[in-house]
Length: 601
Image 1 (cartoon, helix red, strand yellow):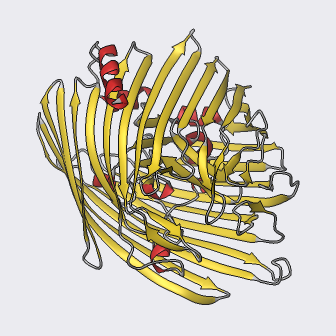
Image 2 (image 1 turned 90 degrees about the vertical axis):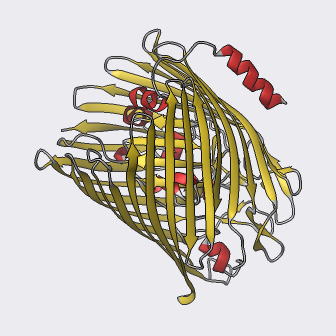
Image 3 (image 1 turned 120 degrees about the vertical axis):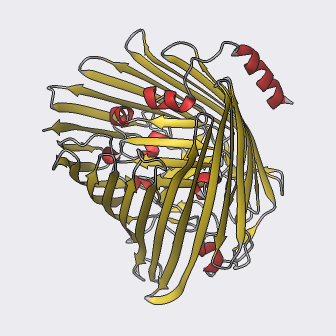
């Protein structure tokens, strides 16, 4: 009843019609963040001077991130976790099939190479296939213009952190361009053990090159590579809190080749993309440092993906889009140089999506997707919605995700695991109060079935019955007020429950909030952020769970343009030096300070 009452109250509140703009057009024009679609543009990315992509995402309400210096970030969105959020980089899936949840450390992507981030919340399986049960994060590294530009950047800070990068865009002809970027960062990360002063050396090196062609036909071929060398802590089993180690080293290598071609000015607007990602994760520790047991684990995860899209039909009132996709995943694991597994799976998918503009005030959407794997198992997803007066939208969408190769075939796995499925109901209301002030509200109900979880001693992966998340999100943005301030505020509340035992889902906070205020001057900018995550439940051992305390994260960043080409900047992350628990027993390292410069040629 609370949800339906909120719908009625909000509908009475927003009685004035929205200006004659579609929501997507507003997003592209002004970069406004709605509660269901978050767009972070190039200027905002640059102003943040964030060291990582997760630092950018963490400031968006109801995007909760559990992260330590010793494990990849886990993203929690509308009741789902990282395995239910699909990462797309330049339009192609970007994950490591060898990981437990088919995820990837997006912090291996150099922030300075990113030109736009778009987060679409809610199930997007119809358009993007499996894994997009609770949302999609689209990362774009290519701009719309092909111009020559050159930049170097460097900074330093506490914990011995230093980073430097060089970035070159070279216009070869009016249509042809070449870019090459490289960066390196190092840091002595503080131990996640609360009272420990031990530090762990980390380093990340990235090299990216691309050849682009922009005309009536747009195309690119791109090579991404990264090398992450890190000494890590461990978990003190049977409890799950952090424990210091000696000489426990992990190396993660990523290599991606991405190609795309599209002809948007042709009648059918064909677009084709293909990608090959090779990931290797290596864990090593000598016997003396490991208490008599040596560690030598090696994982290869290979991902091949292709996609072909067409605008099948279009007139004044009806648009029909469709496409096909193919994905191949492979996991190879070795222990002490002895192969333990070599497993793979292929998926094919076909989708159709129809938009019917019944009138200026009414728009209908419906879509279907059919996927199958090599065992001839078929999965159907659908999506249907109606938009009224361009500022109210109702939608129902289903999604699916096949278990990872690790969950199926590892020593902890079960070959009979069922796919995870979801059904999401969403109501979104949007209002443009004036040219620079916007607001939106979203109510959602997400239900997951056959969630994969680890149970028992020794633990095994199994399907649990159901989970359900009911929530509300409110977002507002004001640009150029008083008149040099930009303000963004977000508030979220959700109840993510495991219906099997009526307990909260692990690590999903009930309450989230963020506030960002930027002051823009002619030659400088300063931005202050406050991020709140409420109480979360987490596993303390195989049989016990404990609540983690809420925390507030305060960040401050600023820049000053000395000349047209030279800029100084600084960022203070976690100003209050709050060593909160990112997950049970793993504590954030506290205040991070960095300062540096960028020089454009």
